[in-house]
Image (cartoon, rainbow, N blue to C red; front, side, top):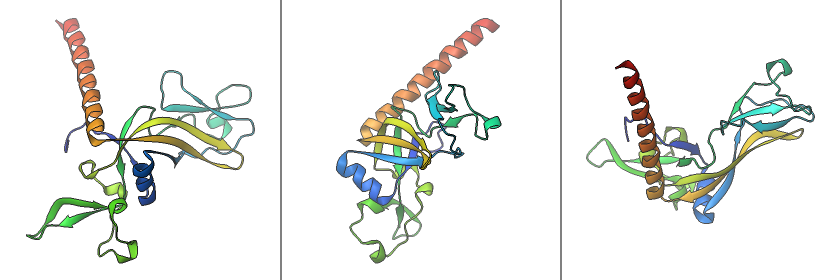
Length: 193
């Protein structure tokens, strides 16, 4: 998929979270809501009816809050329910004995060496390419956590899936996108001709 415009979504996990996803087969993680809304008494989050990843802050009266109330107009969640994601985690690309980089990688969650004993420095999960991923998950649920004494965050429930399941799902989504594009092209060309 390198160079392809269609890429699977990703989520960054700590080494411990990646291990727990494997061990438990699922995990609930938190990701900060950006921009973080200030607390407004009685306000709560409400999902946009026709767009699963768009949320609004709603006042006690049921009206949407926005810039005039000192909060953003919309909040976009990083993923949607049923999204398939690859997991970005601390990683290291092995060196090729003949020189240059190898295709082989080590993931910190798979390492049996204690961090202080490692002979190499783990790379940031942000830089981890999709082709190095070994862990994949499906988003089971996503809800915002918001309250007076709560740091606003997305609660994302993940279920571990295999690479094969993730790849099949990703290809299936690409086929649907291509079919929709083909139908749009057909409609446009019929109108032109």
